[in-house]
Length: 181
Length: 246
Image (cartoon, rainbow over all chains, first blue to last red; front, side):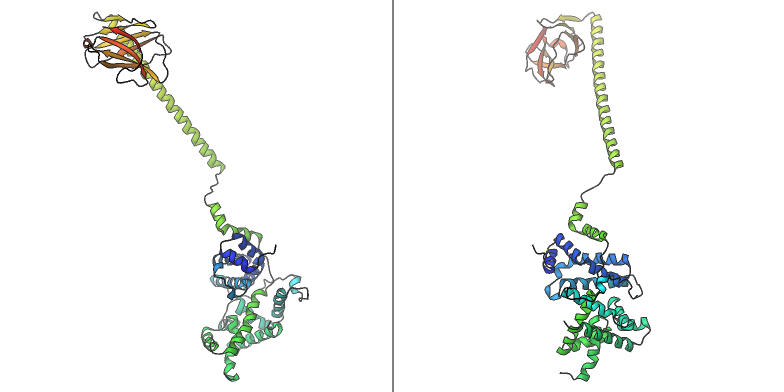
């Protein structure tokens, strides 16, 4: 018997099905936790943010609709917001994450055996890793630390125009490498 | 359609807007432009693919096993099963057992005490009755009226003027728990007045009973004893054991 897809599971969660909730947890806990750890750079805070994210999934499942995109994207959007809120709550200074410790599998350039979805994310990961340090820094501070361009300029001591230029160049490079699907 | 030069300031900000990092004022200006510019909306959609992808472009890392268990404890089924259940420690159980034992011992002691009090009261009554009987035997005006019945014997010590009498009966049979003996004073019109309710002492061969009356005993013509339901009756209902005429 085929396993239910994400949309079937989220509908069941909305109806209070705990088994469906745990199935989604088993399916995506590693990705949610990786994102919280990347943003918070603290295993204990990351674990708490991961727990908060899944509790939000339990309580807000009925708010999901297919127009919001894939369930995983919706879940990771909640994850990012939860982790950034926690970051502000802790009043921590932004840090460039060093928490990533991808296994060899993730480092290898995808080949024909890799599934299309997985291949896409690993390609984007490699594209981000291939950015120059300055470019990568602005992407990290903007997206994974939640800073505005003005805050990034202040944080790094760069002119605002330099931040804007480097951010735009970094995004254009990712677009070229990763491209439109 | 806006020219390239008109688009330029907006296009430069679209990638930052897709990352959610554009300052508030510039965001408002761009959002107003997006309402009217389809090509910029397409541009934004392309960059949103990248920002959405960045959410998933982090190498997966499994959380500790304990997190799954903690989450389960937040689910309604775990909350329900946790609330009504109460765990008792060994000390609490031991304390509870001790309280029950002490309560049982107290109840037993209370029962014993009431039993002793009852026996003491009964003994006191018997002693009083015996003293009255002895006193009456020594009194010159006392009559001794013999019981004339086939199975029992004894006498009624009677002083009509003093309204005092003591009934002494030998070999009175024991009754069921639901029964009792009742003595009746009978006047010449045949009316019965309850004079005593009693049970024979199983440890003694005779039974002594004080007969009391609110009227002088001289107004009565006889005394009868019947078997009645436990607690006595208002009027005789059971078998008569004997009668003594005054």
